[in-house]
Length: 381
Image 1 (tube, rainbow, N blue to C red):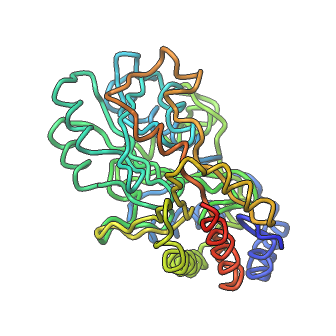
Image 2: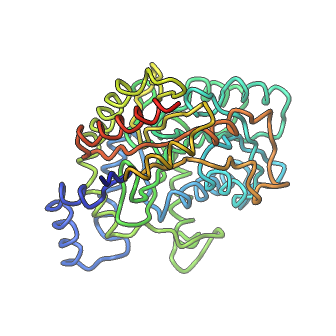
Image 3: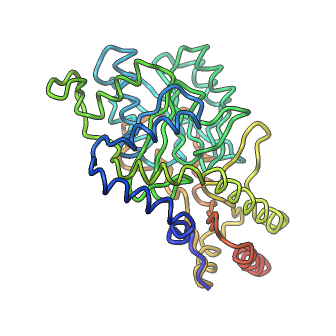
């Protein structure tokens, strides 16, 4: 038995003609930098998300950095934030979220998560804001495909005059109520890393916003800070989205809703099979949110998570731990962050979470084999 977390070869075969035709078109016109597919992809995604502007960039990480730099220029009139400027986010995420805050000159403030959803705890954000005066913005992370509580986050942003930068790297197509994630805050960022719900054949990212000034700034920053190619205005980067990646993403975009439905169907199957097992918790669905299951993550609360992972590996079933080390425990953030409160729930989750295979084209039979293996392990304890 060999059940991978994700089978990209299977996905390519499923949409082979669309992708091959897209690549062939690029080979024909040979416009590899800012080719026509870049603009077309930006416009298609803007329409999909319901935002005014989308800007393709070189990665999800660069999308975070560029957005924060643009926000600093707009709101501070400075190239960067400074260390006294605090940006609230979660420590239970990929390092890029917190690292981007440092790279933009600000200080990350880590607020603990909700144990049921793994997203940032809005009550604890509010508690911190009551006593803080240096906070300039918030970065909620829509982890595993699950939305943060955007009603509460936007209400606090309005009350305290903060920007909101949505990290949607794991939730393309997800929603809060009737709005697509990435269209609710001031800015939304996306990653097109190959494993994402919408993934390319390499790195890629996107900035989404209704703000024309932010749009113009990001477009300058991604090409060396210049509106005029040879007359830079800001400290910039080489952070363009390639034409070839745009073409591939454009071809795959038409499948994203179908694949998200398949992910949700697999999640429902896993839930039915696993929900009653002792010592194991399955993901929950928040009523206002549309979960798109970038990851299907269970929680083993009997201290046996690593044993289960080893057991499944021996049976040929791949799993992953997202994430084994919370950001505040990483060396890079030592002395460079603020802990808003106890981060116990994040630390606990890091020891208990385990993500199972949720390949959109995986058969129910393979999903059943995964579930049966977990059931057989559960009987041992």
